[in-house]
Image 1 (cartoon, rainbow, N blue to C red):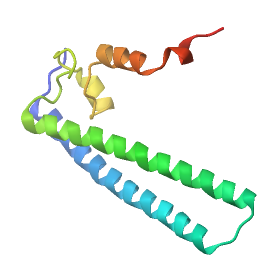
Image 2 (image 1 turned 60 degrees about the vertical axis):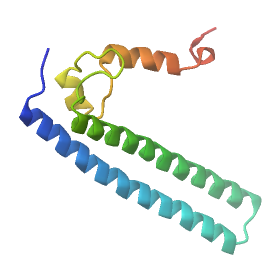
Image 3 (image 1 turned 135 degrees about the horizontal axis):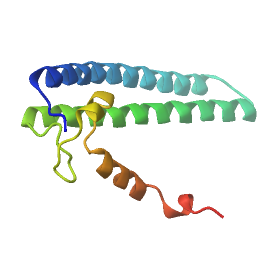
Length: 131
């Protein structure tokens, strides 16, 4: 098992802080794009095809903002764990998270085994049954 040393923690914290800033910028940019599309829709008269296309574009932009917001929440949760000293410990089983996992995904809150189990329960059974 690999343990976190001060250099590893410092590097991971720097990555998390940089990612937080990046996510904030992407969310702001995405929200501006959604707002611009919405305000343009109000001023323009379009046919049904144009309206459907714009609605689809807005839906995609909303989804991107939501995805970025979710990642931002994960990054901020990891920063909070760094502050309270629980960073690098699985939130489900309490075991250390492997250094290689944290390097690959610094916001990871679970060890690989617990994350796999978490994801298996997050998928509705109807989507996993094959005919």
